[in-house]
Image (cartoon, rainbow, N blue to C red; front, side, top):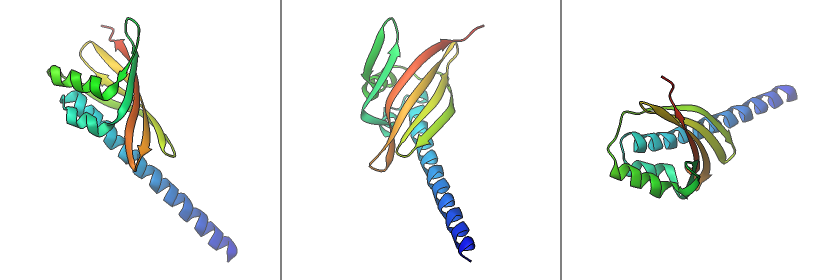
Length: 139
């Protein structure tokens, strides 16, 4: 009888843990889709749903750059017209209240590969940093 109770308890704990992980995964995907919506539809309000206000964005252009992600991306979408963009989530990793995601935004001649770091802050998943690179398409 003790073995059955122990097994039942172990299965219950595992199921609850798996269920919580699934919920976090769904919430992270929702945050990522706010980011995608902001970038594809040039909607700065969607970006504010995805990013923590002090989130950073880093990349190598002619030199290494680091800026406030929300300000830079909002400025970009507010001053440019949307263009055809294909988005995809490549991978998501979650451990406790921290996560990372690899994303792709594909345009006509190039695509961005984004590496996002996310934290669960006051119950909400927010992007706290974005590091990206640009990959030119080979024709």
